[in-house]
Amino acid sequence: MADADFSRAPRDPHPHPAAARGYGKRSVPDQATRRRGDFDHLRPREASIATYIDRLPDGSSMDAKTLASQLPAYGQAACLTALRRLSEAGHLRRVTERIKGDAGSWNWVTRTYFSRTARGDDWWETFLAGNLPGGTGPQPECGGRGGAGWARQGA
Image (cartoon, rainbow, N blue to C red; front, side, top):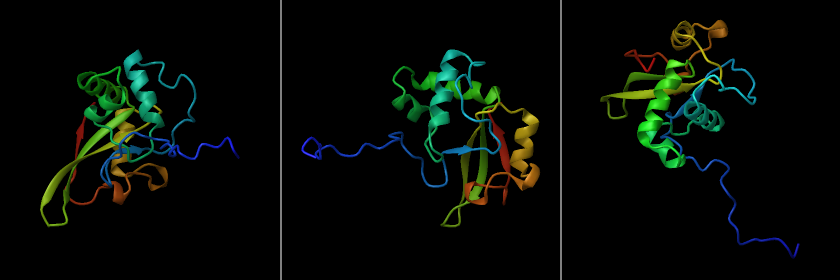
């Protein structure tokens, strides 16, 4: 007990910034189990960033500026390009949705969905429509289809 260092503050296991409530990373269902080499089919930069994103908890901020601040090897432009390439490879979907705010005004928001397993466009469209087996799709509190509609970004 004499060796214990009580002056050190407990370290946050995920120092990556969280997005505003209801935003940030959203994991999709039915992903393969995490294992070494999940992103070996990608270029090294994209694989590195995908591995980092995969380990983030849901709700983490995933914009290029935040990723660049947390990954010192990459700048904002590199992170933005990597996010685009992850979308093209089927690991990421950014979806723009129009929602009604607390004050009654309409706002455009972007939801970001991430999958460790690469998915085709058909799978993403089915997921976003909520038509996967078992009715799996975006949850209402995460911006499910309710109201104004979706506009796909990325791929």
